[in-house]
Length: 365
Ligand code: OGA
Ligand code: NI
Image 1 (tube, protein in one colour):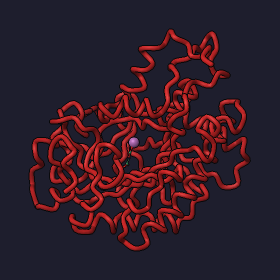
Image 2 (image 1 turned 90 degrees about the vertical axis):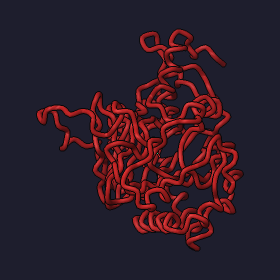
Image 3 (image 1 turned 30 degrees about the horizontal axis):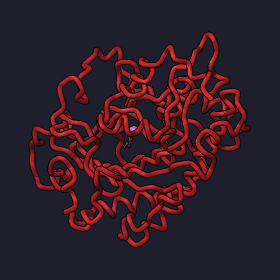
């Protein structure tokens, strides 16, 4: 076992779920205030028919696409997109190979066990704090770009098609990411390549994949598949499971359950885009709920800025009325800063903001 670098033994949630327990261990029981069903509001206020915006890119003129994407990211920080250019066949295969990976015996998966220094490989929780309350999920994390970090020897060798499928899938999803960056730049009234340049150009972008596996859970009301968090990076392109929902997006005091549209990706803004846009685009809190009879697989593709570039609000978006809300910081620094904390709502980007609202970054070099 390679898990000895963790501060305590790692619990594989999938193995736990398969052991046939009917009560979840104490370590997974969330405080009442964050459990999935806490807001027992009168039905007047229900949001069953509210969903994040759905954007169909088919045949849309660029200007119109930029307007729709921009609007969604200002208002929600989240949208679903169809006719996005990624082949449905690849989406289906990508889900399938990862489901097959997780269905293998534990010993096979343990060959890829991750460590706290890289996070690459098979893992079972976020954060390294001893005694933390755990999430009901396992995951696999890998680097796709820059090429210097793509190490296929660390990707699962089984099922045999996995590496090839993920290579092809990544290529198309990275293209989609570039296209969305362009639309976002246009919507901010900036040069169309503004965000791509801020991310370090096509060669600089740091793309990685986190495949989440959420086993079914005997007491879904007491725990979460993934605790509330905002994504620290640039933007996330999520391929949700096609037969069960679970992702919830925060809307004021409510949690909206996203109903995935067939063939769609769910895209959300991360903290770095919130910083670059000086908070015009929002990186919104989200979490995952689990259920008692279905497991769920999701592929979260993180499209991040080159990790050693300073990220700060675009100078065109800093005015006297709207001063810079964030100090310059590299994504590497930001990641270090939050990794010690584990998933913790929006506290990270917000705390940057509180400590710096007067120190405008507009005069930095
Ligand atoms: C994530 C995430 C959502 C999901 O991996 O950051 O928010 O539906 N995943 O799995
Ligand atoms: Ni997330």
